[in-house]
Length: 271
Ligand SMILES: NC(=O)c1ccc[n+]([C@@H]2O[C@H](COP(=O)([O-])OP(=O)(O)OC[C@H]3O[C@@H](n4cnc5c(N)ncnc54)[C@H](OP(=O)(O)O)[C@@H]3O)[C@@H](O)[C@H]2O)c1
View 1 (cartoon, protein in one colour):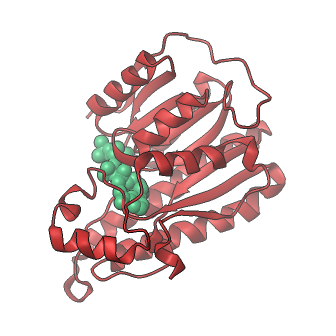
View 2 (cartoon, protein in one colour):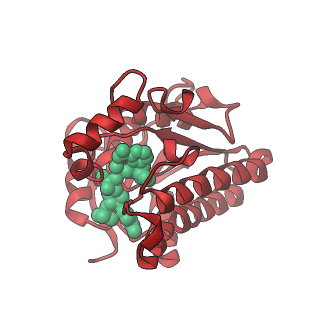
């Protein structure tokens, strides 16, 4: 794996002019981790549609290169940057690459993982792997982006991906639930600490979404039926629905929203 900048996949080298439309991200740079597939990819696409210049970050260069090229083909602005976000030096490089693109204002932490398993014999290796990506990496990226924004005196919006399991439990998900509860705690603490600097920090908490992460779980008919039974409307959320919630929090339209967890969970946690 080669870390660092991969490609410019943008029809225009300059960032778009800043917009006063509170739903627009024109003129702003958005760093999106986990942007090669699933929810992160959907967020990158949606933020680009909202006018942002997007830096797509993940370890698989081929995926983020293809995603950046697809965004550019649709008229958006995007670059790909390979990094393992559990590594502090690579995170610093990714944030520097985002700042080099222009006015870094938005960050979405969608890099995440899950390894389900019964708690009584859950491997510590898996526990550590989940905390490394879901918690440590989220903190590292928040820390680097927060430092950049505070240093520049610039307002900004950070959105962390939690889960319905950031507020409830589920069998076979002790490690995952613990990491997502941690993400929500981190989100609230940073929101309070950075509020005076006008750096907003929020989380989006989806229910199950069909992505490469959940493909195998949801392919099992009994598990899928159980998930649908727990959802009041019986339907999973879509990548686009999650990305739209992220977009809202990223925009000035959410100017007074910080320290919040926006649930996109079909009502899972409401009953
Ligand atoms: N899908 C769901 O049902 C669901 C529900 C609630 C919450 N979520 C949360 O939403 C987020 C995205 O989930 P998803 O379903 O889209 O997952 P996914 O399909 O597995 O995609 C995960 C992305 O994260 C990247 N990534 C993982 N480890 C990384 C690392 N160390 N450094 C850089 N990038 C890394 C992956 O790329 P590389 O492997 O190439 O690095 C990939 O682009 C996660 O936080 C997940 O917990 C998902």
